[in-house]
Image (cartoon, rainbow, N blue to C red; front, side):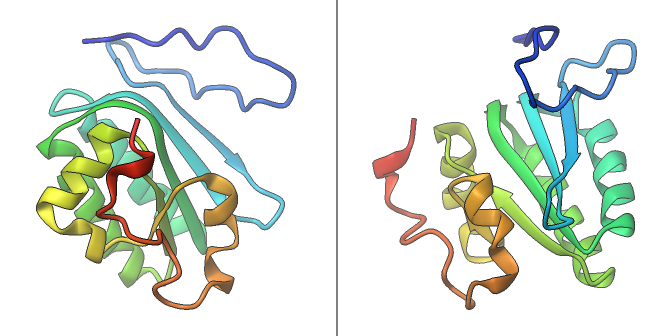
Amino acid sequence: MASVDVTTTVAARPAPIAPAPGELMPVTSRVAPSSALVVAVHGEMDATTCPLLHERLIAHVRSTRHLILDLAGVSFFGAAGLTVLVVVREAALLADCRLCVVARTRPVRLSLMITGLVDVLDLHTDVTEALVCPDLPAGARLVDPRQPGDLR
């Protein structure tokens, strides 16, 4: 499994939440000027890393009205990651919390396309777009989430 060094920060970059012992997936969170909570995930989303992420996201869903889950730093996206997205989406619906998912990398987008979750989740190509998410009409997310043109 890959490990990401998050000890170096630049200017206003959010500081990582201190990882628990043995945690392989750094997660950062910050409150945006629009009051949305932006949670950025880095590394691998698999059966080892997802249980703690699941707990954190459920807690965030209960404490905010707009949660942006930024998966731009995810290098591996397994079935456990898909499960987390589905469960957190359901919790967000119940809590009346708007969940926006930033998905622009190949590992994340391909998994979402294959499973059909591109039609269920509110997907965006970057955090800036997701920050204005509540103001966008339904269906104004990715132009065509099935087009791999911007996949890295």
